Image (cartoon, rainbow, N blue to C red; front, side, top):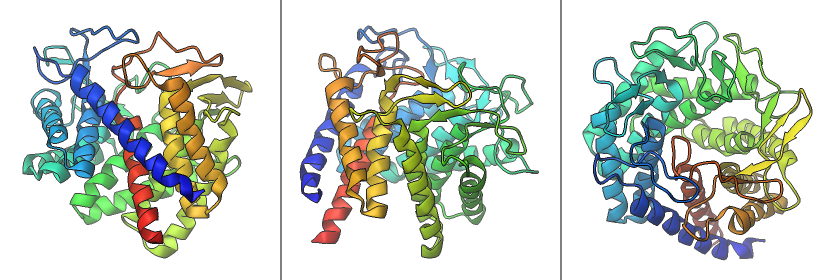
Amino acid sequence: MQGLLPRYRHEMQQELDQILDFWMTNTPDPVYGGFIGKIDHAHIKYPESPKGSVLNSRILWTFSAAFNLTGNELYRKVAGRAFDYLVNHFLDKEFGGVYWTVDYAGQPLDAKKQIYALSFAVYGLSEYYKASKDPIALQTAKDIYRVITKYSYEEKFGGYIEALARNWDVMPDLRLSAKDANERKSMNTHLHVLEGFSNLYEIWQDEALRKQIGELIRLFLYKIISAATGHLQLFFNDAWESQSGIVSYGHDIEAAWLIRESAEKITGDADMNRIEKFSLVLAHAAAQGLDTDGGLWYEYDGTTKHLIKEKHSWPQAEAMVGFFNAWQISGDDTYLQRSVNAWEFVKKYIHDKKNGEWFWGVKEDYSVMDHEDKVGIWKCPYHNSRACIEIIKRIDRVIDKTN
């Protein structure tokens, strides 16, 4: 099986170049700055659409990480554009944190403090600091981390409240999106708080930050991962009592590698053995969502026993990394094959061979989900470019170890 690694790596490099070229060519806003808020499935641009802080932060992370991998100055330039726009338009200079959205001209639109969005700002700013060594990027990341822990941290049971008003007051609607449950805590937000904090810790070894990362990992291992099923539970009340029966296969496999990666930054070898066991539990659970074509189904409702028969693009990207990670831990070639199969599925069904980038996803009959964005509040270059970067780095480490 290891003989396929050089080809896999080569294809990941080609794919990364293609994804980044699409975003450099199509998304910069030449009139108002930053990046266009929406391009639809038919490749039609909507220059007066709102701009989301999550999209901007993910572009910031993507091009910073691509520069850190390749040294290509074009990528650092795009990252700089995203950084400037975040600092000048998304950053709330009065109350701290970042706005959820601004309008096409960069004026605040939805000024709520969604902790998910703040976490991505920390993630992107930290990666940009690695690329640029700009002290403003590091300071801004620290400032956002501090307002997250000051206003969102829930003292009694641990973890973070989903959202607050612009001035950090309590607000009734905490949902990240219309499909989500209106609960105080969610797996998704905690996964990306962990991701952002861990990236910040790479450049700022603060002891309080290390403890926050450690607590987040423990919350995943003992509260968020179901002891009964091995799947992630999605929504909780303050006391970490599950409020949902939905299974998200993409999040299962994403968490399988992100938790391990975060733990590697702060824990010793003894702890890693325990954490790697949980990584394999999650990978095994996620594999329940695999179809015979190698693709990963979207969600399963355990309450109604209903499988949502869609294959979105981002779970396929996470399957590529998560199953590769499981192979690295276990040595079981089944996992490596699942990673490759996910990539083959993407090439066959998810690639937009006409306009570039990846479609949002496909339905059960492989027809494209053409009502969804190509670029938008949620559709970004983060999952797929990160999959390419992770596979490239991991294959390089495997090859270096065997030489």
